[in-house]
Amino acid sequence: MTAKKSILLSLLVLLFTLSNTSIYASNRVSFASFPVPVLIQNSQKGTFIDIVREACSRLNIKPDILIYPPKRSFKYFSEKKTQAFFPAIPFHLREQFVLTTPFHYKRAFAFTRKGTKAITTVSELKGKRVGLTTGFSYPPNIVNDSDITVDFTAFFQSSLKKLQAGRIDCFIGDPDITLNAMKELNLSLSYDLANPIYEEPVFIAFHRTPEGIALADNFSKAISKMLEDGTIHKIKSDLQPISSRPPILTKKVVESN
Image (tube, rainbow, N blue to C red):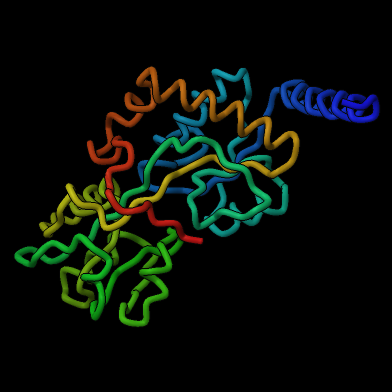
């Protein structure tokens, strides 16, 4: 190695070390997020909130979790008004962002009227009116398929009422949120919790800067430890068993790019 290259390498190592040190000098990290029933109830309560706060605790970081409507939360993050964003899924991926190890797998299931055959594949949605929820992201092979008629409502309960009334053919939803909504409405529907219609990994996203890359690396290590020692499984203990499992589909995880 030439003297010039050696000096350049030393400078790069020093720059990375200083940027990594600056992360912990402030001891605070700001996160943008959005409300998700059960998973993110507010900045202090929810399954995902507990996971992020535990990771921060292990890294001696004080989190500032800012809750906005879904589109605004990602906009604030993309404008670098916060250092991090969660829950980030493939739909949110951009080259300028760096991601942690997945801490969850989002699984969606098709719910149909009682007495009908449960739908377990996207291809079975063709020709049907499918209820979706505003603010939630869905893979393009559902929302962009001209053979599938999508019907958005603001709340899970609204779509379930439409389903019960026969105004849509099925509803795509998270098992924990949907089953809670069914209980509230006293509805009985057909579904198959052994076969998600799709699944996507869930991450914490950071900006692709020296600081963001260092943070993503440290949070990945913390999340990996939490997966290994059972902490994440324990935090998810109130969720449906299917929600706590690692990837289960034999096909490729849906990537909503």
